[in-house]
Image (cartoon, rainbow, N blue to C red):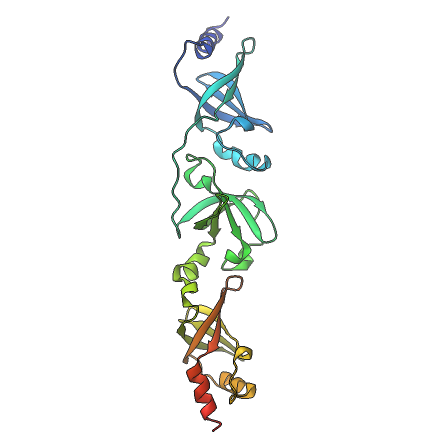
Length: 278
């Protein structure tokens, strides 16, 4: 027996000895369709996916995450051993992780596991190089500030997302960072029922309204009821607004899908328009 094999045999016997109480650190060096190949010191071992420290709802998720786990080291237990091949069957299920705290509005690097027409499933464990284990995250199409950014995304792609909240099933609700900056950071829900300044932007024949000169807004005149103000008069008022003019409107609702505020004219404006008919 060569010096190398002799040394390997001694290491194997030491590792598999029932009298050995040392921590057996398993270092992953390769992945296969069924799991990982790892070494405890120099002795080779196999870790199947179901013996890893976390599970996935779909085994195909391992194919995406596996390349990130090469060179990762876990505490292991020997399930079985093959003396003739000096091969170990290992479990790293008992490897312990410290929990990771996610902060609202903070960005995290994720990898895309699944993509549907309006939903993406990601693993946010990538942000800490999986040293805290795996963490499912979810982002829906409406939580992209620019919906055109959604189409080109693909399974296996890395993506930066902002944390919003924890779902009941433990997943993270996430959004595109620009959606957080332009939308959630300003807490638009707090605007509902309040009057706000709205800036008029005339772009050729089009009129664009922006609440606080920031939020895209839509004025709903068909919801305005006033016995002394006609729809024709409302249309005339709207079309004659000047570029950069600031008007006051009531926020009636918000739309996360379109990133818009729904606006109504205030009673004061309606009363002023009604007085013009007196």
